[in-house]
Length: 274
Image (cartoon, rainbow, N blue to C red; front, side, top):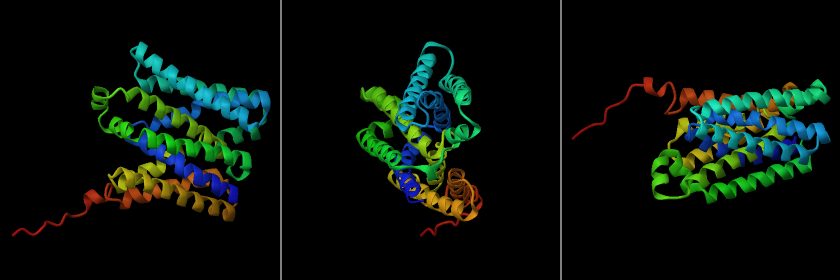
């Protein structure tokens, strides 16, 4: 439980801020597509070396990068848009990954790859997740200004700076790294949950970017603690419990936040005028 909490803390500090930028760039579903894209590489590492941390990490990173750059190449060289090319590649990646794991493994191994096992994190896994979180925080600090400009006015960034492709591909690299990090804790199907759900909840509460990043990270950490406690006392899987707690925070924000469903239905009090 202590290792699981430490891993969730690292993911909350690294993966969740990346999810905020995914949300602001209108690329939330791209995170889901890329989480499936890393599966065949991790499956090949598993097929060759078993449940080896290094092999599955390197395989997942390489597979994610191949899908990202292949989808970008298809987008630029054909009439297909980026969402269509990513959807095609992620579906093929998901099918290939499940097939590769099934060739050698048992159903338990397939469930481990797809849904993770946050309670089985060891010291090496924690060191990997913490290293990726540190790299992510450094990368976001380095690319913060061009990332913010690309979120709100990408054409302006392309007009005034040559950093637009650097920010774009550097950010995609951080997304792949954090999905691989989340994969070891929550699995490929759950890793994107801790990235997007707290980010969506934060967006409902504030329009200020630093406050949004802080709120998203804190809500992800609080959801992780609640999910781990719920899984312990109710004897349910920890990974889905964590993501469901993130979902509860999102739905509560959807109802109560200023940008939620009920805010527009509340009566607006007029200000007194002199």
